[in-house]
Length: 229
Image (cartoon, rainbow, N blue to C red; front, top):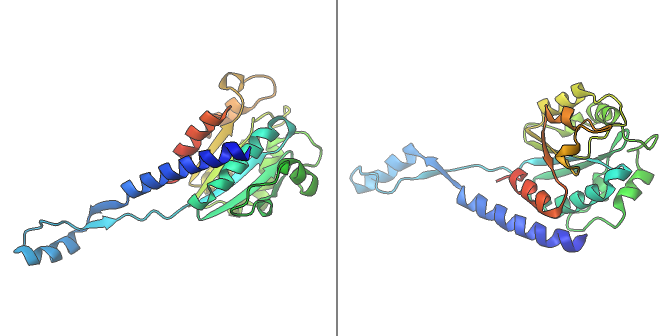
């Protein structure tokens, strides 16, 4: 997994750096331009541009760690770990049928250990009964960790939205939408499956931007669009 993540992270980081450099200059600063023009007889031949402020946002990850998406969650956590220098702060939360913060399991500059999702399930409170329950997980997050979200936060929800036919808890989702600057959902299942069986993906997709991410190429395209410029 590390062999896949490292070159992808390097490529995305390079692309992001180029985008930031290209957008670093903003609108004309009229006051400074007029002051400079005094040296040229009042002719503004050298306009002063106001630098844009691109404060790096916070990133919060809310990852489904149930058995059906463990591989996808681990890969995405690896990728996000490799790209964390693009954000001012990264906090990670895992869930199965409840939610717990898992940030301490990820050290800056150090790839997550193999089997990290299994270890997290064993050592934290991300699961009570072992079956996915998005409604209860969202309730736990908004009850205990809602302060992790704010006007500078990009929230990534990672999961297949298979709820075992439990209530989707849209009010809790809307609490997250109201608090965060951006909310995106990455779903490892094909879009054609979002209305099948116990999937609530189609319901959630009416309220939050959901992307199909079934392979490395799709994930790279989505992450490139979502990361800050």
